Amino acid sequence: MASPLLEFLAREHPAFVHVPLGLVIALPLAMLMSFRPRHPHAWKITSLYIAAIACLGSLLAMVSGLIWGRQISLIAPDGFMPHVATSKQVLQRMLQLHELAALVGVVLGAFCTFLIWRSLREDRVAADVDPHHRRAIDRGVGIPALAVALLWVGSWGISGKLGGILVFGNEETNRAAAEADAAKRADTEAELPIRALDYASLEPATEAPVRSVQHSNRWVRVWVTASGIDAYKAGKQLPPGAYAVMSTYEDVKGKPGFEPGPLYFRETKSDGTPYVAFYWPRVPEAKRSETGGEDAVYLRSPDPKVQACMDCHKKQ
Image 1 (spheres, rainbow, N blue to C red):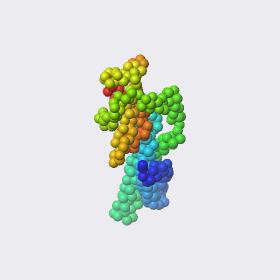
Image 2: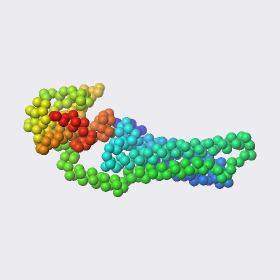
Image 3: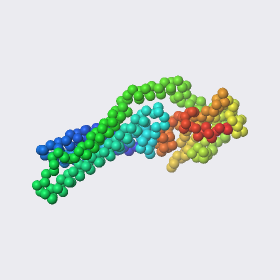
Image 4: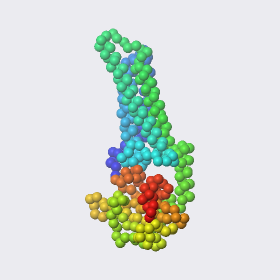
């Protein structure tokens, strides 16, 4: 379970974002005031404070957003970017762009802050040489610094727009959600692998669970339909219509007993086509690195993620 501090940072991500965003928008206005004849030095100092606070706020917003992304399983527990495997993962793709735009903004912000600081430092050095020195008014904080500040506004504007889409959705995200919902309704086993869950009604292929190095060293036990048990024990390919389910368990570190692992399902369709499925309804937090950060997984042929299972069982 995440600490209360991490929970707070993740929950308040939208609030943390709006503070630096407002400062970033206000920064070019303060910088423009430094080009005016009246109080240019004071406006430079104001610009430096705004930029520095905006940078710190941006870093806090990025950290809170990363924690939030991990908590809602869009980002792996040990990752920094969502993994996009297919074009249908619209939210993951938008989150990637959201993060990249925010990161570009942080880099631009740090550079802008440095340029403003350097401008003030040059004024101080010049004043030490000539107490009557007055920096040319038309230079202000400098055109380069102002240009970088405007780029900063643009990158954070893009990041903010994508963040709004992630929260409220748009035509693309709504269409992707509708397509996923339609595909799920059309699939009779989209919610749960019903037959695999009823594995205890099948014939056990072994008298007791055994260790399997090939399956993350878990305890495993195989269950097979009556029509395929003989073929399975003989190491032959399952006949059409037969299927096998492997239930898994693993030791709980520091505690007695076992913890349920994923279910593996293998079937030979009536036309002889092989079919495999992988079902893990409750992935422990410590194991989510194995599932790309997902807290529940249901994978089935022809998903490329189960291709390794297909390749391993080609002859059986």
